[in-house]
Image (cartoon, rainbow, N blue to C red; front, side, top):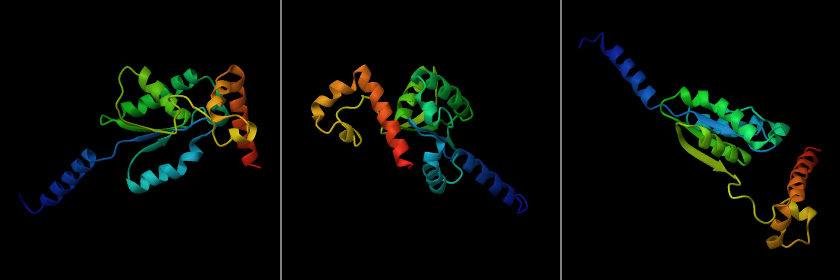
Length: 174
């Protein structure tokens, strides 16, 4: 090999290794009453830790739009995630927060083939929620934790729980 070809071989080797060793794309799916803005810090952290990683925080069914029927959201997110998955052979990482975990689970269950390498669920209520949470004690101070779920899973309890969450979000912005 001549000295003139050596730099070309080094450049091609670096190029080939970087394409093989590149990081998988990351897709972030938000939770109820959230949107991409709440995950900017996480996306920046991923990019700082792994420069060059493609991080997509999906802007779909944001904020009040997250109140739409869950299966409608699953369909929408599936159509947004599918092209990202198809653009890479190595697979993707899904990071899904709260209701986003339910959506991602639905997306993966309804995609006949997918290449999700990892599924990270943060605070996702995959088995429902039992007992109280930090905001319920303000509204039901005398309820015993072990009995509260009897109310929470009634039709009335389901409607009230989301209204309480909306009210608390509104109050925290004042």
